Length: 48
Image: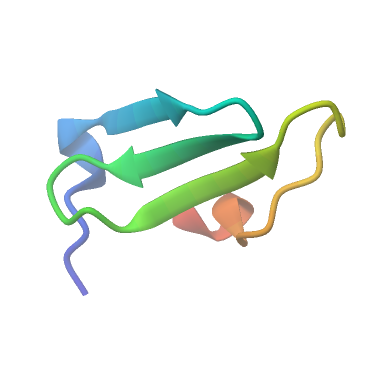
């Protein structure tokens, strides 16, 4: 599956969450609630 990781990511900040998308495929790379440290709703460590 081609995600386009080499083309980078887009980061969006809201008052409650930080969202990171793969720029090319618009796949969610990370979704983290603010103020919880390193918690992430997605398996972002699998994108390597």
